[in-house]
Image 1 (cartoon, rainbow, N blue to C red):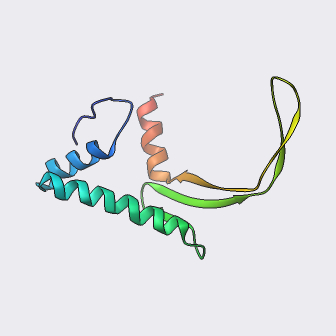
Image 2 (spheres, helix red, strand yellow):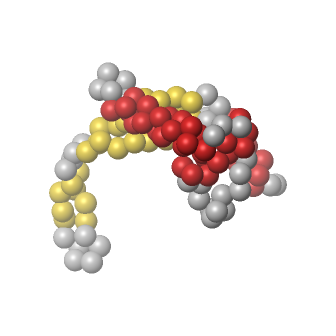
Amino acid sequence: MATPSDPSTLTRADLAEALQDALGLPQPMAGRLVAEIFESTGAALQDPADGRVQITGFGTFEVLDRGPRPARNPRTNEVVPLAARRVVRFRAASGLRALLRKEEGP
């Protein structure tokens, strides 16, 4: 895979470059492919029937509805109500978790 410009961040351009190198795709096609993957993922998460994207060996993205709740302003200690909202949760697959544990070392 291509080395990212910033080792701590993997960007769309880095993904497109990795596809270009691995599959020999022209740069515009690799960029469109990456964009299509993200568009499809976003559309699947917006689907009210499911709101879930599972990538075997990587993990699952899931939309959750969080109810309203009280929060506290740490500066003034004032209770502030937070409205209900939808959030995306990611749960890593066991293969990804094992890979991350392996890189951590003993």
